[in-house]
Image (cartoon, rainbow, N blue to C red; front, side, top):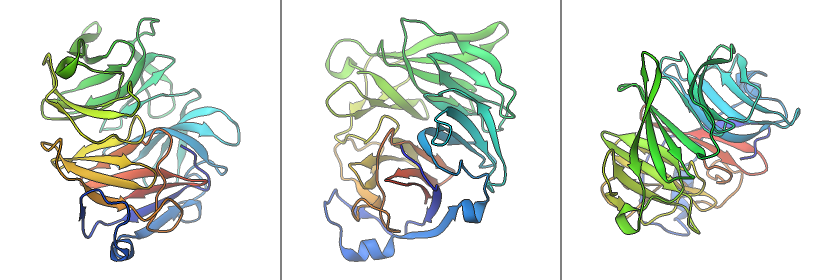
Length: 311
């Protein structure tokens, strides 16, 4: 995702539009605009690099500090940054490309995939705390999810259509395959990427087909529960919050669907007013990264300039 002169818009969803529609009524676009804007002028010069970034992934700890993986447009270097919640301080955590990240809620560490190695990094800039899984030519790690309550890290191996769990033990990290996609139909998992979790169920973006898709799969099961009939934009373009799955759709929208309704109606929650830079518009691009914090939905949006929205 491309970011320049990065801004945060705050959007409060006062209503929802049922069904997937190409052109929502003008009243929707009037009633669902950004309420607040954050940028370098309001958050300070440390908010993000001045010339912007190519966004890859982002996350938040429990104090709502930002963790952002991307490429600095000025230096053309990949970085992993921590930005305080008020935007007053930015720390370089890693001078390398992090393909996916997952931060601990207490802010004590951040997991990252770097050169197909999974490691836990310091959030104060001191580098690697410990290696979770060394790199191997046999695996291609694509997405991470950390369950703070169970203290389990989940990682998708897109080369082998597997989801692993990693649990810290006395002698390092113990790994187990918790989902193995093989065969066809309900047993198939096709190049998994993003992972989200609710209870004992994982929600996984598949990237192996012509279009991305999302499957619901119980941990330890030999087959999925179902596949949703929508395809998210970007390999990280989903989030699970409050019994709903949210997903980026096409170039300018975010929808939500009840978790137990793979073929039901979706509700428009953000955008749908054309791709662009107006306060009621978004532009989906790149990895489509989508994150939730408490009951808020936090979006990073792209066009020629990148915007960070949350609602």
